[in-house]
Amino acid sequence: MPLTLLFYGPETREYQEQLAMTLCEVRTKGEITIVVMPLQIDHVAALELDHELHELANRQPKALLCDFSGTKYISSSGLRIILKTAKTVKAGGGRFGIFSLAPFVDHIFSMSGFTQVIAIYDSEEAAVRG
Image (tube, rainbow, N blue to C red; front, side, top):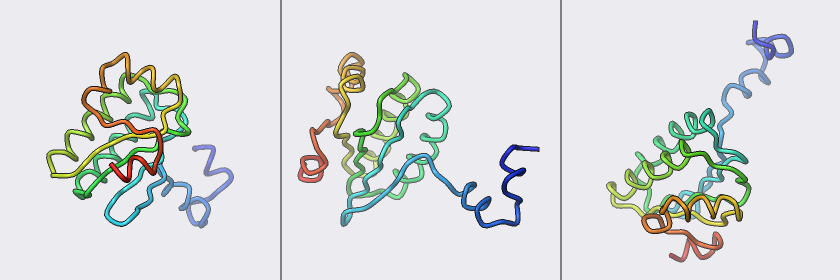
């Protein structure tokens, strides 16, 4: 039996809310969707992130922006998901960008060459204006 069932039975609201939790917080500014990325994007988190970003990209937003201000680590699996999402959004006629990268994450994006194919902004305000 999962540990969560010991504390929350399936009939309780807390248990149902726990199951409904997502990896990312999503908010909108007009026609722009902003996704607050998790603290770490390792291989396991990338699997859930892929699902969440795929759902958002398929809604064909005018723009999909990812907030990396709280992200301290991203794996190659995470980079792949970001690139895949960027391609999906652009294919749907939208704009994709990322902003507020921590130094280590910025270094990973630079070393991987992603700075050449993905718009990167210093702040949310700059990304929204872009």
